[in-house]
Image (cartoon, rainbow, N blue to C red):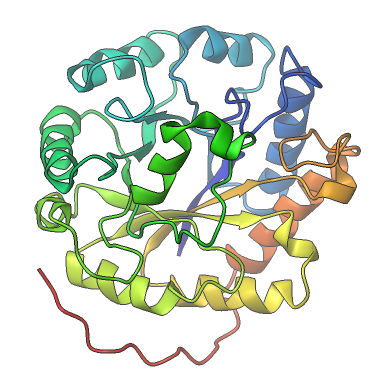
Length: 312
């Protein structure tokens, strides 16, 4: 079920790691090394991946290598959204991967790539098709972001929110399915990409979309998925029950689990981007999740009924 763990998410992006507290990523590097050792003690053969970087920056990767952060890992990862947030054209995808390959011997995964339908669904559909043309065969794992639009009632996981202008609102239009679960034009294009492409879909605490998402992924021919188990969520009421339900629902897929997000009361600052006050606590969380889900099947829970849904 779990094929890999990913340590953090976009560490070189200020929306996910605080550059004021840790401007040279020393604290981040030490946290990852400690977590990696704890995970290795629980599951020696489990693939470990450095949190996908955004922007794609070979200098950052060299910095991680020089600090010994990559020594205990099995792969590195990149995120790219050239039609929405990056300052490079979509046709540069092979070059961007080559830039990271040039500075590390580890395999390079594409753990998030996507196109929003913010301007037009036709743009997203074309972007999916062109991305497949450019990335097939370039990486052992390519995770399209994402299956669902982010509900407008929720907040995107970014620090400055509406102050980011249209960049913020694009977060809500990255799905192949609209918020109400109806397909967009790009869904048919994505169906042509599987099983080469997997998905990246974050499930929020008690996410009502979980069972429908599983049904859609199976219909689309998805075989591998990247999602997350949030350290911050682990302090919510009945967190383990929710984690069990999520991981049980996903047990038919090859899952990469991302460990990230600092609980407000456990960080140097009261924010999910903060380095933890005590690095051992993050390592302990990672080890506990690996122990619970990598070594055995999770607790079986009854799935909710899936309603009839239209397909392509």
